[in-house]
Image (tube, rainbow, N blue to C red; front, top):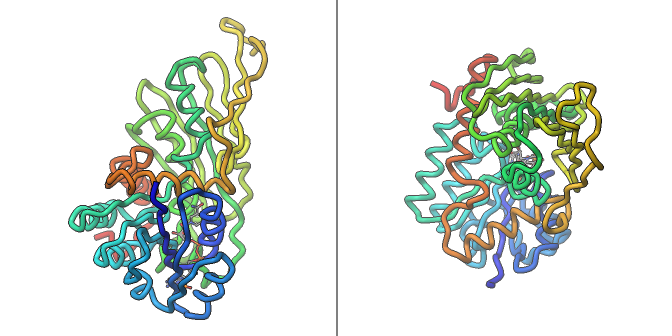
Length: 338
Ligand SMILES: NC(=O)c1ccc[n+]([C@@H]2O[C@H](COP(=O)([O-])OP(=O)(O)OC[C@H]3O[C@@H](n4cnc5c(N)ncnc54)[C@H](OP(=O)(O)O)[C@@H]3O)[C@@H](O)[C@H]2O)c1
């Protein structure tokens, strides 16, 4: 397989984790970094072993060595930065959420199609070996029929008001930053939601700081999901089936899951055998980003324009759910909501 040569656009916090994981993936190489500042680009490139460092995103996307651009800027800028990459003929892996709204996501996908380039939202959860194995086991039926899912993700955001996590102009939103994960997990495990009801607490700047959602999925399965920028969530996810319970202690960074089987017909929850430890088919690479990095390489090598693990349809479905939740909790982004 050819080596996939990566360029990183926006060397901030998550780009560091991503760059560290590129180094762990065979057939992937970080070749260039683009920042608004040449000094930041150079420091990042030196730290993670990239040959080229550019003080502008335009220069990064013009580098002929770069096959695919990883967009790690704030989500309000993803569309603009993806456009830059596509117009320069690059493939794109774009951080989650793909954009602020479904309308912007559709525009980005249209640009990818127009330029005949690969595009994937960096929804690494959907490429994670433990998550994929839980889904496989669930679909096979040997963990029972899923009836209820619960997942929560959040942490106290203690950065200053200028940080992108709290800046409304950059898409600040607990839903967009954290809530996208519980929604994706429910989608992967239960299917496409039929409806979602939500409530939220907003900041004085109308950012959703806390969101709670309840979703109805095919066959009457239900999910409760939450996201928070004001509290330390457990990061736990549980899927209760009619024969037991799957537990992901940290569904955001799992290295295993447990399945606790229960005796059918027992009202007091008697165990029906030993707890099963579920691990992925392959060991988790680094912080877990290696799997999406390898998947992008596989797709580009095979001439695919989207990944079967993170289809455009799936991304649009979750974006549509988030548009709906935002409308319910009263959060709008002036640049995209009309
Ligand atoms: N996959 C995950 O687990 C995960 C985790 C966290 C975040 N994310 C996503 O990754 C994206 C970046 O998040 P982050 O936490 O890494 O953000 P961050 O630390 O603030 O980094 C964002 C980078 O974007 C660049 N940038 C370009 N225009 C900017 C502007 N107007 N204001 C601020 N920065 C600007 C900056 O780099 P230069 O100025 O040097 O170019 C900055 O370092 C977000 O979309 C977020 O949702 C994903």
